[in-house]
Amino acid sequence: MKLSILGGTAGLGRSLAIRFCASGLEVVIGSRVKERAESVAHELRSSVPCSKVSGATNQDAVIGAKFVFFAVPYSGLYEVAKAVRHNLAEHSIAVSTVVPLESDVGGSARYLEPSAGSAAEALQQLLKRVPVVSAFNCVPAAALADLNRELDVIVCGERQPSDELIGMLSRVRGIRSIYGGPLLNSRVTERLTQLLIEINRAYSVKSASIRIEGV
Ligand SMILES: NC(=O)c1ccc[n+]([C@@H]2O[C@H](COP(=O)([O-])OP(=O)(O)OC[C@H]3O[C@@H](n4cnc5c(N)ncnc54)[C@H](OP(=O)(O)O)[C@@H]3O)[C@@H](O)[C@H]2O)c1
Image 1 (spheres, protein in one colour):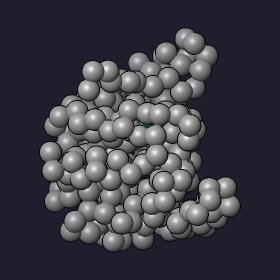
Image 2 (cartoon, helix red, strand yellow):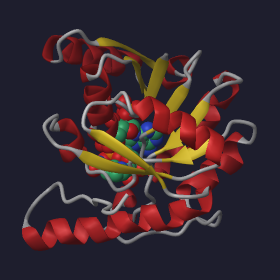
Image 3 (cartoon, protein in one colour):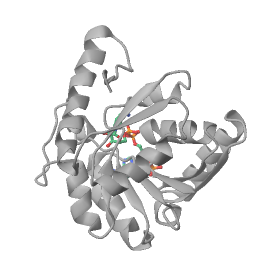
């Protein structure tokens, strides 16, 4: 099964690639610049044993991918979605990790509410026929890249694509995924990130995360 990570050259996308590669999954890193994706893929092949990782432009990275992770800043989401949408496979599931924060456009970490309600719902409007689920919104890149860290991931979306993603994530080392209801609830998970950023600031840490108890 092929996984594509758009914006996988840095930050959250790069950390996703590390986790997936360390779990033996096949990953294609997407970038606006092919050479940048190839360079990060090369680096991961040297640092993560047995990596099945390659690099491509965002447009090429999605071809034949079952799960397509959108890991780009909100300010670039429209451009990236428009560039790749005609190359998505019939059976693809789009996964939005995107949080619309003012810091993406040079300000503080204030949540900028999209007119669609959330970034995930905005992506669903752009992609139309391909189901969108949200995940990893409240998972810090630094925690994800630390393979010893166990993390909870809340998945929101229609039940079937969410269950498919949860099934895939059950193969990923250190990840427990939890169904969080319909895509509408991405409005909650995306906003939680603003809270986590404030907690990080208050305690001078980089990787505060959320754990669900009692499930
Ligand atoms: N970082 C975190 O801890 C974290 C946690 C939870 C959720 N998120 C969400 O995940 C997404 C990515 O966050 P990040 O911190 O990883 O971002 P980032 O490091 O700023 O960017 C990730 C990649 O996105 C591509 N990119 C940057 N600006 C772009 C633009 N204007 N248009 C198209 N592509 C662009 C770049 O790849 P190329 O230049 O190679 O194309 C870049 O390497 C954001 O929506 C963020 O809210 C992040």
